Image (tube, rainbow over all chains, first blue to last red; front, side, top):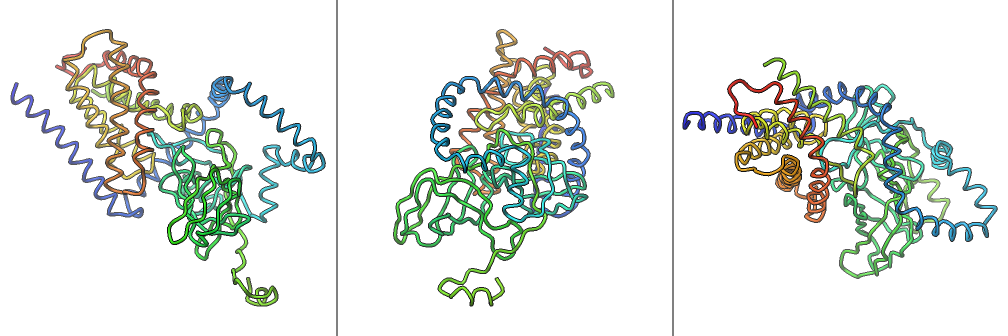
Length: 293
Length: 169
């Protein structure tokens, strides 16, 4: 018995040491190397299977997720009736917006409004594990996708590409805690850093003009800077709680994302985007144009 | 031996597909159950800690490969889950359904907590304590609810191809 117990403990130690060695090697690789290549190969091998299974089970899972929403229908119905009454008063604008709300047309509308070159993709799977802050999409290097490209859907900014295989890519969602993006508050023009908080509202840290109040309801959009592949002006979310201006200290605000993470299906990868004009505060318009934007 | 390895491989691949594709749209508060962990529980409850740890190693490795996390993180956690469940197996009494539910919920919660602890060590800014606590509670409860439906069939399958000389439940 003692020898038997020793053998079992030896096995446990061996497995744990092997796992620690793999962990150390992958950590030191820093995202490039044979281990990363092996991971990408496994993803590339698994992805077509996930694709097929997703196509088979989608009708069933959509049925079950709809059943889960029945409880909130009465409340949403009352809210929608109130919204409809208010929207009827703006009938002309609604007629234009209603067309854009069609799922596929809204994707094209987003693309046209922001003058983006995109390729459409479908979310195939999410990673195993408790933390679902990335998704697998069915386009990859063969479709022109590269790392750090922005991903959007009809509602707004979804995230950025972090891993690319020939036919599939992994997208880091903007709500993931490891995600941080340079953003701008529309209206006040304040710049900030937006961090994901999982299923909780995102956190906006205002970098400039912290004494200026960030109003609730203000739209937050992506802010381009040299070196990033994320275009300027992609809608990210809306400020949920106003953050009063504070001098000489960090100002934070909660931001509710536009994208519904429970219903990620069709997305677009931004293959190329126009560079945002260089911001030269205080210069007359013609001097800004001459600087080459 | 080969039949057992093939069967466990099939179980693992099915569990991964179920967790990544089928349950992707059936999340609660942004979290889904740890179906792969429940299969580790199923194997360990039948065959003990040694088999649980070996299967946990393979399962964790596959999850790390597909999830994009550092290779070895889930591997370590799943090995410990498999070993731990096997270690407490002799002390578990009561209805099998209840055992699988409680062990499945606890194992999933501990797996998430373990992964979170490793994340805090290797990438301190990647998680907050609030998010980890949410994940532990929600995932534990959700996984516990599914445990009898996952660990049960896995245990039944594994019992058909026992490890030679192992005492099974």
